[in-house]
Length: 279
Image (cartoon, rainbow, N blue to C red; front, side, top):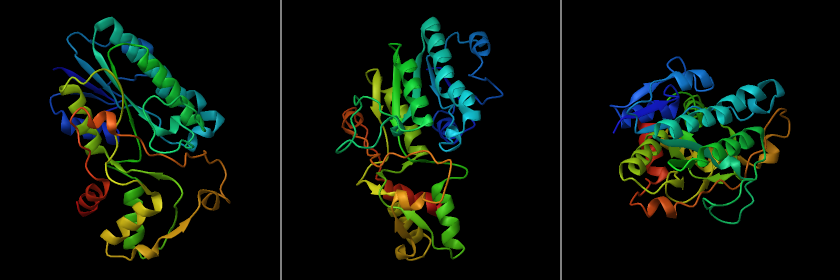
């Protein structure tokens, strides 16, 4: 199988490179997927699957009108360019999506076929990108949540605060599951290598859903601090004095039954988190 990873410089892209060491890895310098000419000019001959890990993920910055063009260029237009190439050259497309395409009001775990209802500019851009990806037959749309990999992220921030003796306030009414980039990459490889039926799959960490405050408390415990050093607040309280903030879905719990039916058992997020913090 000849695989190409685009957006290879991000946290998921780096995890995919470790999971698929024989894949061709392209960061933005290697291929700017927002440039339709560059995508058309790339030599796709013999490529079996393209894994699109390129994305604008700065949720709050996406709200600024000056950034709208850049957000949509990578989250929407680039997906269309890759989908066009997939149709022309016959490769399958793996595209990453987010629970931000939903408004977070669904009662219970969110199924793959729930109609999109985004709250934010970022969420709308991801929903529109999903439409481009699913317009072709040979696609795996992988929807995930709360991804943690290399580089700066929520877990590393909490670990740093714990180590410096700082006690943060963290929201406790946004509920979901943490997803390690390594586990996400392994799940994507599973879908591709098992030749799972094309379509949309929810893929996150496993285990009982929790709040961001629960995640922070688990990090504090792993760093030798008391979980009670994390103050729990509502989303409204946390963002009350902040401007330029994108609305967040409160329910980010994705239903994993479909991906589990393929034989994948996502690792419990708590165990994965402990290993990540220890590493």
